[in-house]
Image 1: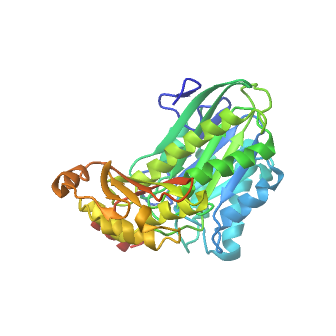
Image 2: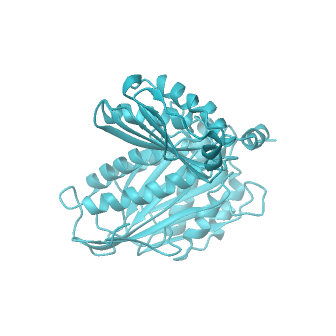
Image 3: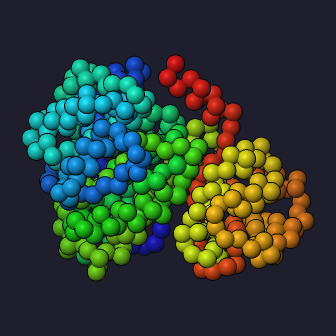
Length: 401
């Protein structure tokens, strides 16, 4: 991170000026953990969002998409334990009710409240508990940490970050929180992410910047190849840092900082995959174009055979080649170069002898890198995934029972 971008120690989504959050144990999950939270700004915000492209969208997604049409929002209410997805008209009524309860609590228009829910699909929300919980939530300037924990489902750690930015338009901060460990293969974009900034950002540029950041981060991670009807990434910008208006003409550093925040959170999600023990990075270079590079990287990172091989520290390079071959990207085997944890295992289509025992020992670490150079063009992309373990099956075999 360069001199213009500095990570804030213990930074979170409430690190930017004017943002508050809080959480409570409402009893949605019947656990001794917070499961309901609110994030809000003291001032009105320009806002943008990116959502699941799944044909079946959860009620909170549909409602939040509608509320963001005007390009503004001032608060987010989120619960874990129940996704409020595939719940019909009653589910939509519950999502509306959540937004209304928060708007009344904060003195906002109901249209300025976004709603997000994560957890079990096809189950109705316990609205009596949610109503009581919303009334109990206290909002504070360091409440982002509580919100990050309240969003968690099968996550093993909260995912949060904030970056301070020194730019020509002025100094500002971007913060963010995310959740996700299973049903991770975003196409937007079960993951949720909420971002905040005190920069003064033009609405159209904010939406464009968010899409670009999501494209290089959350859209390039995979845990299990499954997507969710609840996927949501939203950003609120309240302008309280007093910067010049940031737009496409002067927003290069804002884009870079937003990318950094989203990349950090996305890699946290991949690292925390259900039952995972390793973060896997797959870099593809020399593809015909960026689209083909993205396709190849995601397919390799998501291959179940490759993921299980990495769990067992097995340098079975054939798993990578098989996934690459079915990815849909153009590949000329005679030009292909491949590296596993920096060790060259293929050059110009020929297998390069390597010390399998040494490479296997390297695969026992917490991070694994794969680099593929197709030598066909200038397209490049990076995807992140994780290994596939027995624990993944154990977690998901008893998720609702």
